[in-house]
Image 1 (cartoon, rainbow, N blue to C red):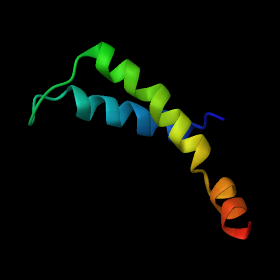
Image 2 (cartoon, rainbow, N blue to C red; image 1 turned 60 degrees about the vertical axis):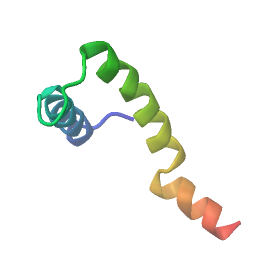
Image 3 (cartoon, rainbow, N blue to C red; image 1 turned 180 degrees about the vertical axis):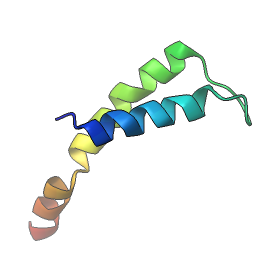
Length: 55
């Protein structure tokens, strides 16, 4: 579920990861990172955490 806020956050994070301070990441490294981040957000979303806390 992509929201405008999430798209902006991803763009901001990408820009930060591309900066050379302290170490720049390559485009493929950043592109590989986002599916991992998306999976983590899906598994650790507020509704999922609440379901796990209740169980």
